[in-house]
Every structure is written in C-alpha cells, then in structure tokens.
Picture 1 (tube, one colour):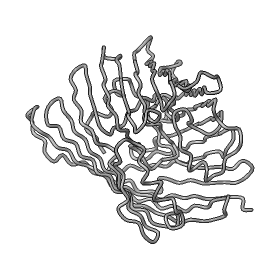
Picture 2: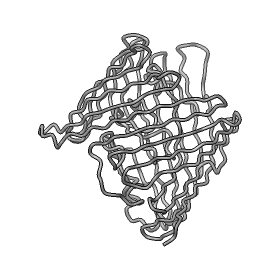
Picture 3: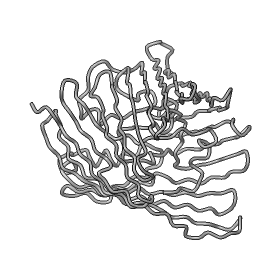
Picture 4: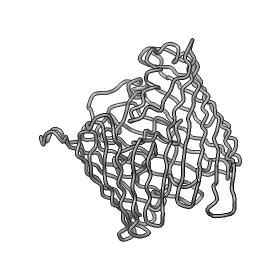
Length: 399
C-alpha cells in the first residue's frame, strides 16, 4: 500500500467588470456587466480503488445587473463549466449529479456530453429587488446568507456552506421570497420562504437580529424540510480576539420523540497579530453525527445540510494566514474530524491588481498514514457587521 496519495490543483483566473451604461442622473437606468474565466487542472489518486485520475475544467461566470430606478434592481448570473478528463469519462452518474437542480424551478442544463467531455451551465442568480430606507423585498433565485461563523454555519438554513467546494466562491442560490425590515441601524427582521414541490422539502424561517453590549446577536425559528427549527448566533469580542458562533435545534414535525432531535453548535475565535498574521480556530458539534469512519470518496461526495455539516460528532478546524505583500497571501488550514481523514490545506494566493490570478493557488495533498489526511484549500471570510450581512447581496457585484 502506498504511503502517500496526492491530489494537485493548478488554476488561473481572468476577471473583469464593465459598466455598460452609467449616467450621473440618480434615476437614470444603469447596466453593469462582468465575469471571469478560469481553468483548473487536477491529478487525483483515490486510496480506496488505487486509481489515478487526470481532469480539468474551464469555468466561466457572467454577471449582469440592471438598476432601472433608485429602488429597483434586477440581477442575472450564469455559471458555465466545461469538464474534460477521466472522471467525466468513467463516472456514469457524473452528468446526472451536475444536472440535479434541487430548487422549485429547474435552471440547470447539460448542453453537451460525449467521450470524456461535458458542458454544463446553470442560472444560479435570477432575482428582482425593491428597497427603501427600511424595507428590502427580493424574489427569485438568490443567495440568503444567515451564517455568522467562518467555517460552519448551523444558522444558514437556505444555503449551507460547504468548505470542500472551494471552486464555487459565490455559493449556490435558492428560489425564494425574502422580506427584510430594519428597525434601526443594527436591528431588524428577516423573513424568507423557499418553496418546493412538497411541504416536506420546503424551508421557511424568520430571523431577528440586534446589537447588545457590542455583540451582534440573532435568533431565528421556522420550518426546515419537515423539521421544526430554532437557532441563535453571536459575533463580538473577547478582549482583542473575535468570538462568534451559532447553534440550531432541529426536531421532526411529525413526532416529538427525543430520538428525532438534532443539535448543531459551532464556536470560533480569531485574532489578528502584528505583522498581519490572522489566525482562527473553530469547533463543531453535531449530535446526529455518525461514529463509523467514512472513505475518501464518500467524504468528497458528502452532501451537507445545516443539521449535518460534517459526518462526525466533533470536528476541530484551525487556520492561519499572513499578508506578505499587497498582492500575496500565504497560509493554510487544518481540520481534525472525529471519524474521518484530517484535512490539511496549504494556501498561497496571488492577486495582481485583482485582474489576473495565476496559480498554483490551489494545492492539496492526500496522505494515508494512520489516520488518512485530506488536504483542501479554504477561502477565508472576514467578519461582517449585521448591516453588511443585510446589504451584501444587494450591492453591485465587484469582481
């Protein structure tokens, strides 16, 4: 048996944003168009089957925004990927997995598939929004981000974040209706409904967020895919360190037996040292986590939800990053699950003038030495205030 298994990624990206029409008059129509093109190459050795797979993909994104008036915004964003290599060729279910759109409206299409190549496109943002000083109403396919913590988000009921999907910075959207009301600069209500073909697959919840003694707090409750859900989250400081976390309680709406209850809790601390060293550590508890080990292929195919963010009961994560120059960051992440391979990620990042991002900026190493080790990159997310969370998806997208 080989001692080391290697998965290596090499990628580059070219991005641009172009205002197509921008007039000085406040109420004049404005259009904004942008996007990027990037390439990702991979070499994968799977320990379970002793196979080495060579693959690649071109990833293109097109973003379109229209501001017809002061209060209205329309947004459409198209994600297209051209896959080629042995995974596409030898995985019969690859096309079906890509073309599986879980939302109410099917906006995912496989345009062509033959002889180890596949072209897939999806409209993952398609919404219209109205807002004034107090109200924000948005309908369509959108990103609803209720998470506070960096690594795991039990409160993110509509778009749970999967750190293993590192090549999808924008994250998937949901077909939803969302109404937000600001009671003050740092407090308000957020109501969202994600309908589906059946009530058992739908999500509806109400969140109230506020500030108390320099802590941003939130409480929420609702219905999550046949479960009743209640949760809370916080973000603040312990001395000079940041401290944030989330907790959610899920219980079947069909019965009140204790065995149907799942609790997920995460807590995180972070600190910025002199010399631009940023570090953070996180702990995740999943009461419904399994005790048996999972294979590498099972972990990579793991489909998470806010009630099942990692397969095991306990998981610890740590991250360190340093800004070497204005365009170069170095760092890495490590995750210690209770019942599966450890996750280690070297993370050099190069951003020349925010236009060209050459690699290798994504590199991973799989090791199989007592516990197996899985290495994947993790994109950091900086803390955000509640006002920023409220307005994040409504500002013109800058690439």
